[in-house]
Length: 133
Image 1: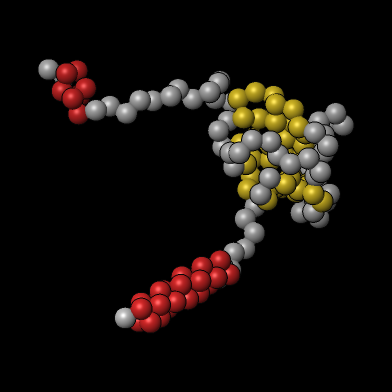
Image 2: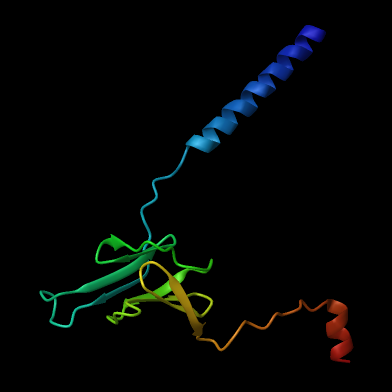
């Protein structure tokens, strides 16, 4: 009986290890997603275009990665190369935060929405009955 129990346990251990290794190494083919892409060409498609975008937290401008990662955790929804020598890059995040960057650092400019979002409390069924009686 002990021998059978040992073989069952060993089999379960082998299944757990095989699943763990397979789940870790089996990845789908994921392409790179560019967030907040922007293309600006003042002289038409042949002229000097300025192309910006964010992949992960890395800001790219005309194919070159900017050294400082984009701050925050929200997804970038808009980018631009604004052409100023002081602040040549800008990024707008999904939560409304707007940053200017030099390539080595980012500065918080403000929130487009005017501040932090208002925190909501979930309403209970009893609270609804009390409010509308």
